[in-house]
Image (tube, rainbow over all chains, first blue to last red; front, side, top):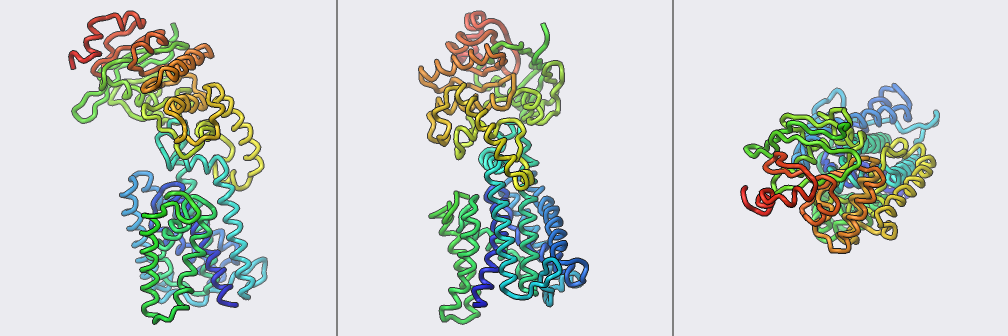
Length: 287
Length: 254
C-alpha cells in the first residue's frame, strides 16, 4: 500500500519535471542537460526555508519557483547565443558546477551528507504528514501543471514555440520576437522544475546531491524521449514508466549492488533504442 | 514623387566577396518592381539587408522617410515590410492555416501567463484569428487546403502559402524571393494573377524573378543588378530588350 503511494507521489513529481524538460528540450528546442540542477535548487530553497521556519510551505514553493524561473532563464541565455551542439556542452558545464556546489557548500546544502529532517508540507496551517495527504498534494500539483501545459500548448504561445522549433528565421520574418518566446519557455520550465524540487524535498524529508546530478538530468531526458516529445501524454507516460523500472527490478532476484547499475544500463539502452527505432516516443512527436 | 523605399550606398562583404557595392535604388509605392540579375548579383542579399537579417557594412535603407538602420526583423515587419524566402521556409509540421495564423500580428495568448490565466479570452480571440487567416488563405486560393499539413501541399500551393504568410503580417510592402520559380504553367498563371490582384489592392511588391516572361508580364519597373551594383533600371521592355544586359544575364561577363 505504502509502496504504491510513494510510487504515485514520486511519479507525480517527475511528471512536473517531465513537463519542464519537455517545454525546454522538446518544444523550445533548447537541449539542456542541466534540468536536474534547477530541480535541486528548488529542493534546497524549500528545505532551507522550512527547516529554518522562515515561511510556511506555499510561500516557500513560490520563492523556490520564482528563483528557479530566474535561474533557468540565466542558464538558458547562452543557448540563445551559442547554437545547438555548443549549448549541450555549456549546459553540461552548468550541471557539473551545480553538483559541485551542492556537494561542497556544506553550510547551505549539508554537502554530500545531504539535508535530513526536512519538515513535511503544510497547507493553510495544516501539516500534511500522512502519506495519503502527500500523494493528494503531489497529484494536485501534477494536475495543475498538466492543465497549465495543456493551456500553453493550445494557445498561440504553443504554436509560436512549435514554429520556432521548425524555423527560427521564418518566425522572425513573420515579425515575432523569437528571443522573448524562448525565454518565456525557459521561465515556465524553471517554475515547473522548482516546484517539483520543493515537493520532492518535503515528500522525502531528506535530500542530497545525488538526486540532482547529471544522471538525474539524463533520466529526465530519457523520460521525455521514451514518453514522447511535445505532448502532454508523453510527459506523463515517460515518468510513470521509467519510475516503475526500479520497482520491477526489485521484484527480480538480483543483488542490490547490481540493481543500480542495471537500472542505469537499461536507461541507456532505452535512450538509444528509442532514438533509433521510435524517435517520437510512446505518445509524442519526434524530438 | 514621394520616396517609398530607398536604399542608398549599400555595401556588404562576406570575407573577400563583395556582395553589394555602392548599391542604391528606390521602389515606388503601389508598383510591382522586379529585381533581376545573374546568380550572385546580390538580389537575396538586398532582401536580407532590407528586412534586417543582415546589417550592411555601410549605406542605409529607409522606408516612407524613416531609416531602418539597426532595426531587428520584427521591428521591420511592424513597420510594414514582410518577405518570403526562396527556399520557402514554411513550418512543415503545421497546417496551412496555422502557418498563416502564426504570422498574424501580436496575438492574445502569445505569452504563457496569458495562455494560462486567461484561457477563455485567448480562445475567443483565436476564433477571430482563425477566421482572419481563412480569409487570407481564401484570397490566395488555398481555402480548401487550410487543414492540410504543409508537407502534403504541392510546390505551387506552398509558394502561394508563403505569400499568404507574408500577407498575414499586414505588411504593405512585400518582398518576394522567386515566387514563380519551379512552377508549372498553370501554377505560374495563378501566382501572377495573385500578384497583380495584390497590386490593385494597394500592396507594393518587390520581386526577385529569373523568368523574363514573368518579368515582362507583371513588372511595372525592373531593377537590373550586376555584381552587387544597380546597373540599369527601366520598363521590362527596355531591360529585356537591351542586348548588353542580355549578354550579362545569359552568361557573358562575370
